[in-house]
Length: 173
Image (cartoon, rainbow, N blue to C red):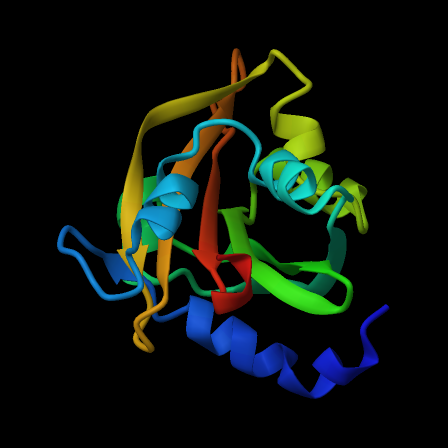
């Protein structure tokens, strides 16, 4: 466990809540960043391959809160959401922060809570019932960090919908 991150967890969460759609380029969007932003396989697995070890999942929070305007549009629902905030770290160094949201009434809440400190990728990329919906959407945070989002749904579960937002931290590339 990374004890030095405990004081910063609210800052990471606040940063992730500033995400807006992005279609331009920034200095952070080097070719290295572009690789990570366009990746369609598991981000967790790609980080593990790059660093020759699995990243550690640090759960910052799992809570009910109000969605951002971007999340309202992508989830096509209003009302509270269940949000899971995590960091992926290698050798105590944060490489990626992620925010996953779903409607508070969704059956997907149980799936998120059941992950504990396991990566969400274990669920999404190993269970054929989960399907990516649409294209990756580029995001940018108020501090200029690039990110992306993708909507996932369980087949044959109409209330299903996980919006996964991932943000690249400078240590990743």
